[in-house]
Length: 424
Image 1 (tube, rainbow, N blue to C red):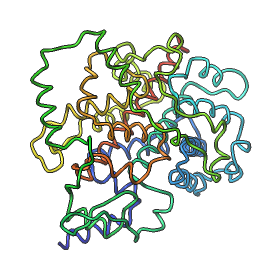
Image 2: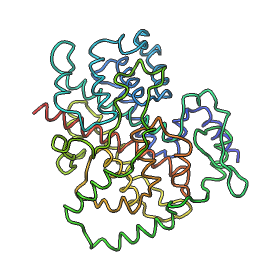
Image 3: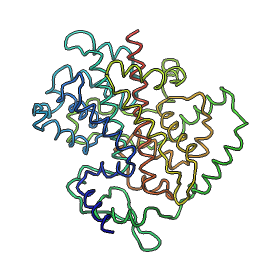
Image 4: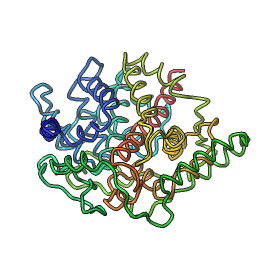
């Protein structure tokens, strides 16, 4: 008990982002190592520009929490950024302003990025080097995806100053369990005492037991392999699914609007793009492992190794549990989550049977994933509470980590492919 109290004392001095990542220490290490590298270690961009690019990226999703953190870093003695830059994009050097178009596209419709966008940055006055472009793209993708994690786990901008407050959901036995926008000393005690719970399920929601039965059934029917045409058709069906209401459209917060241009530009379903102009991105033609990794490593030393480790840990992370069930092979569920996230961005894995997505992810979970990816600032407590009701709190955090990493990888794939096309 004394050890637990000491541990909770230490955690209460950490940021809420640290607390959430702390659920999965094997992932938190590579995450922090990568973030520290792109912001503080050797690289072509000056430190003040790195933090300002992070502000631009987080502001695109109205993420005040991250903007405030990066604003503090920008003004810190170590970085000593120009305070006038914080008045808005109109006060920064033109070279940085030129990055705004790529920021906008990568945040909302990464499939639109082309070699022409890269060329605009690298030609003419105030031009960028290719190494600078790569570092900027990595920072943008990192903070776009991290904004999804922040909103997906319910962190808000006021939490750092309000560590003692908490919101609770009643459990059947009178205990309390963690809910959205909740991290405090009391909450941490409740997490240690009651790490999982079994609430009442809504109609149409999948129980853990049913999910395990579906995974077993899929494994037994593996001999029924679909053709490439059937796989493509199933992929297109998933691209068209998970419609979200018009209310999800984002409107910039007034305190961040000076970091944003073309505020009406947002996510648009990949399936609605002009097919003749923008074909599906096939991983078999351009993958992270075979293409993106080597290109990013060549132009921005060592970052490829760090990103690769982070992607692998997020994808392979498992404790062999699902809610109260133990000794569970979760690989099929994890693969469905990862591939559905990338499907939202038009990325297709030809060797994957997208029927598994429809079998394993119920409608509420699909809507949650799509909202966190595409409209993170519109997430609500109800959105969070309505998914994965029989899963542990830490397992929900794990799914949100997968959203962060699969989304970041999707952005990088589009950007690095455009860079490769420009270079050749």
